[in-house]
Length: 531
Ligand code: NAD
Image (tube, rainbow, N blue to C red; front, side, top):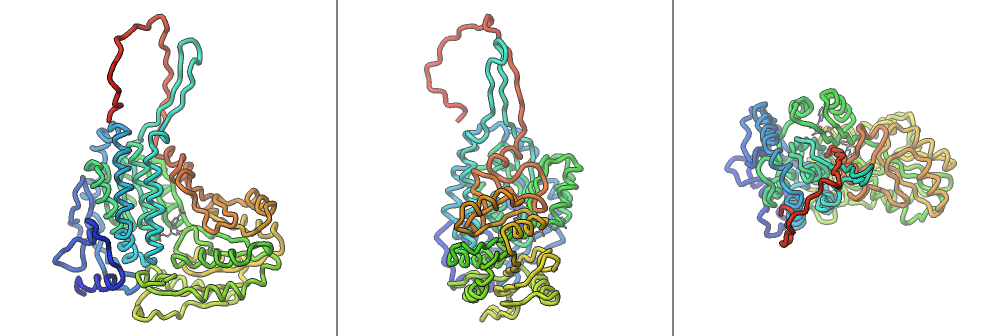
């Protein structure tokens, strides 16, 4: 491999804007593949680790970069930098912190295409979807710019004579984030901007499979004016995760990823006295009522099941066809067949590759398990061939019908472009199917009947519900409220709950006796309030 190979994979199609960040995520280095740096105390540094992992372009399986497993010494340096900086950062005025994030959101906006390119190269999703990934994270950054309202405390005056009580929200210290491979921009942006704008310093460990977008985001944050040491980035796998769970300076952990890792991190972090919020796996059901708008519903089901190759925690991976809606199945299959499977940087691509050959193998074996257990394979994407990308991890849209709740393809999160279809006679039957599933991330109902929608939204035990909205991920003025098996913790990501997670409340009760008041000389200049 030469450095040219990585470029060839993208340059025929992707023309970047004249951005200072163009290709900044892989600095021009004489050696190939490029080595992803650590970000410690405001410097992008080469790791001294002897252990490195290859990063592959999922469309070709070529190695495009290498990422280190940070050494113990490097991880300690990163957390020490966070600890040292906490005092000054937490005392930086809230208006100054707000200004940094105002600049940051503009920098992200200006460089959205560059960020998307790095995502497509390492994660595989289509460029349009990669821009969506950045955009949803950007919305959280925009929301952090309202911190001056979000962090307001409460006041109750005149509790008794001359006595008032008020509360402050204060940062908690060093916070850490551990992120998955499927949203290289959005999920890191759920974490460190919220944590930092509240006055915490932040240690980020991005997914080792897609680290470059996080590095680009770190560079932009530095360029927006974030002081050295406010954000540190380390790389690695289990050792880095254990380090975060155990280091006493780290007060809170935000995790997004699989149940296996999420349950483990929740337990280990909590045992060490940390706050932990853990967003995990899912099995999201779309309930299709016979009175639904057929055209919209079929399009939405197809988009939400197969978009991002099904590698979304909110993918609508399970359809429940109620009553007469069963007869829509052949049309659903026809629409799914129309999707174009291709490398994410190719024009017109709808479905990109899966993250790794192992992921492809796992998805294919779960499809086979459905067949072996008696389900019907109406559309089989396992043999899909993509011209020019024969080595990529592609699986085409796949639909399995006649699925029942005990089948493995139903009990396991597939995390691929596979829609499993169940049937129900009534709305009550559909609700009980969904409520018997252990996950509670998201669900949607498709109907034109308001009463049906209301009954569903009230009775279904899932944290995020869409009515004719297939992927109901809330905007950041709300919170991401996955529930049951999809979440561990007390306070959710972003929105009001995000602020609560990253702050502690101090309650102050004061008594200033009226008879002690003195009169001061008046100030005549406009107060600048710390700016
Ligand atoms: P993953 O759990 O394999 O990896 C997530 C992070 O945990 C990575 O940084 C990884 O280094 C670390 N990790 C992995 N295995 C670990 C282990 N055994 N012990 C300790 N740390 C470990 O997840 P992934 O494959 O990157 O992401 C896909 C999963 O994430 C899916 O299950 C998906 O549903 C879930 N997800 C959930 C949400 C949500 O908001 N609920 C959002 C996106 C993704």
